[in-house]
Image 1 (cartoon, rainbow over the protein chains, first blue to last red):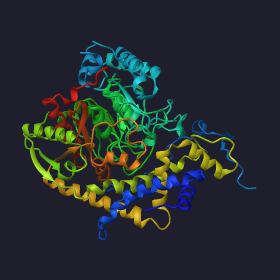
Image 2: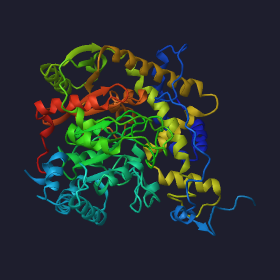
Image 3: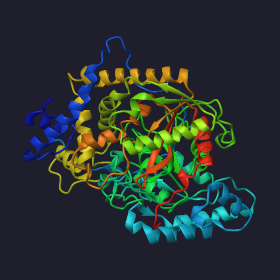
Image 4: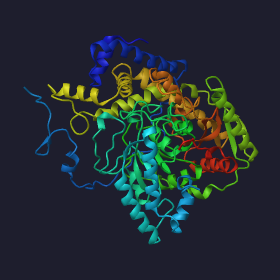
Length: 95
Length: 485
């Protein structure tokens, strides 16, 4: 398994990570080594195996549709990088 | 005996008898942190004021006759647990200044039990690492040899317990992050069954694997801590709805006739010879105590690391998508547009190992690769869980090594992610299956601690603790302490 620099750049974009062009090759080599480790799974035939998504056999619990939490917007926004009038600020999205 | 050498049971008795106050005990531990932590870097934040206030409250509770076994006992929390009004960094620049608006359930329960929080312990960034070297706040050093790592990711908690800077600590374990550092620092750590302790308020890494658990100097202390944190929590959607066993009450059971399964695949290639000899010495001691030995096989356990490095990164890439530089956490300077804001905030906020895992997970989940990676890994996960189910038909407790070697030098594996991942070769299968696992000290090898791993069937923590306690009553391996601390 060997990821090309173009593939690494695409993955970085999907993950919303900025990677400098000169780092792509080295990063690709590191990621490829991890994928080689992962590829060891190919040695076993899993054709008839049911996938296991979760360790416990459980159903999703339901609860009454009641208000359980008070509104605490100011407290939750206290750590936000930029807030105005209770709104999170980001750079302009629509030109 | 010095205060910091005493067990939770001893401290509880002395606190109750008025021989020592929690304020005196807490002051003593804070002094030890001041004296020793510069050499170890166990703590990201020391909460002196909170600790002294909680100690005063504990002393009042004790005086009023309302104390439980943990009341007044000074502990530390891994910095992955959210704590109200105390920074929760998760070892990351991303959360360098993050103040949680609430306490994690585990933190709240231990506070209810009357424990005193000394501080928040250092860890691999977002719990991704096996050496504590990925922390934004610098590596933790192993008190047994400060040129070596304490293991990870709960390395700060492990080193703090080993150096007697706190009586016990919380940790989390996604692939070995309680057990491997416990092994490398000579302490006792337990990863409970998935769902036994609430994940609410624990910064999420891989949600189908993450589990909180206690770290302390003996199985008995761990039993008291587990009793403090186990139980159903409606705020955690995968919390187990079943009663909590009486862990301390089961410690005294006779272990004669308990069937111990030794894993054939864990005792072969890749295991350090000294570690292997120590594990076998511990197995001999269990036999002498009347346990029955059976050899068992986990034929697919060798695929656990490959399967884990799909499942855990996939869940991590999804969980860590929340760090967007908008609602909390690090934001880059002067973003030119929204995409630039996301990308630069995340690239500046996350370290190299976290980025690697996000990218592996993103790749494994991207269009066209799902079947080859994620689905395949889920199937291998099933095979691994089936191996354990079959093994537990022949035995009650599985034993083997916790880690393939003793503590390694700082920097030794830092440039080779795959060799670091193989630190968890014996622990990861337990997380994939969702089983409880422990690490307790075996005889040292060349003066460095060795961990014996005990694995139980689902929700069989009481039996694991019982076997570990009986072994600790008969041996002094867990009483060894690092020189100079």
